Amino acid sequence: HLDIGSKIIAQVASFPSDNHDVYKDLVDEALIVAADQINLSREKKDSAVPRVEFSPKQCITFAKINLKSAHKAGPDIDRALRNLKFGLSFLRDASKTIDHWKEHYNLSLSLSEEYAHAMFVKGGDSAEIIECVNEIIDNARCLEDSCKAYEVLILALYSSGKKLMAVDQALTILRKLNYPFPSQVDRQLTTDAMETTREFMTGLSIDDLIYYPLMTDELSIQTMKIMDVSLMTFYKAAPALLPLLVSQMIALTSKRGCCNESATAFAAFAFLEMSLLGHFDNAYRIGMLATSMLHHTGASKLMARVF
Image (tube, rainbow, N blue to C red; front, side):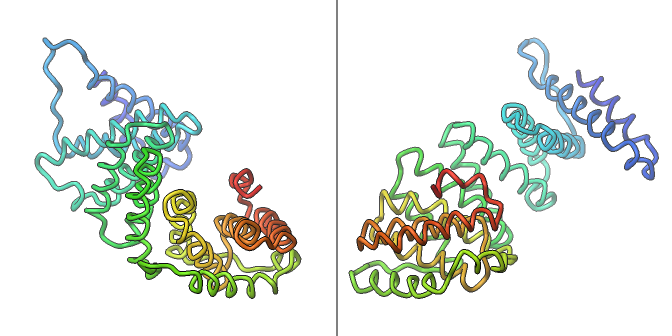
């Protein structure tokens, strides 16, 4: 298997670089086959057969090929997860002699992020997911690079029943993003937040949303994603903070434009208007704004949550 995979890689490498675009699909398919063959060489169950050892350079090459193969897996989550797992194993083999986070940062970040996310989607072991995302957080070079890891961490903690720990992690990353929450929440604070948000929502119509600017700042989008995955966690484990979280999401939308998660923020505010204050008519109007926001941002995958 190793011999076959290596020969395929050598053949692809021999292609003239100016022809790679012409044969892109063929090259990609060849690399996928090469990754499968090389991975099979590491799955030998016969204890009498010694484990194949690779140089750091080979490990990095095979890790890159597995990442590319995972991207080509499409909806086949099992195949993607297999490639990502092997890609990480090659990285860890390389780390015996090099610091792969230091020397191959983008590759390490992409493989780790995508593996953790795929593991969560597949319902994998939460302890392994948490270990993986903590490694990302420990090695991230900037705050933006840790945001996706925090998303998965919050989801993994919540789904494993560690709801209070999920709340703590959400508060930690939101504080780092300059969205702190008070340690104590009283009725007046909640009322003020709801009233400020209601004033903004009162001036909006469905027609306004057609021309409402889209959010383009990447850090703001990442912040909205973290707030969005925190909604259910706060609702279940820190309900007093939920109105403040929703209000912050809508305030960010008003300042930076709308994104996919703006629709769930609108829907959540409609829920609060109805459940906390009994404002049924206003809740219905805001709910209609939320569904309109779905169409504006193209966030069809959030339709079930908004409805």
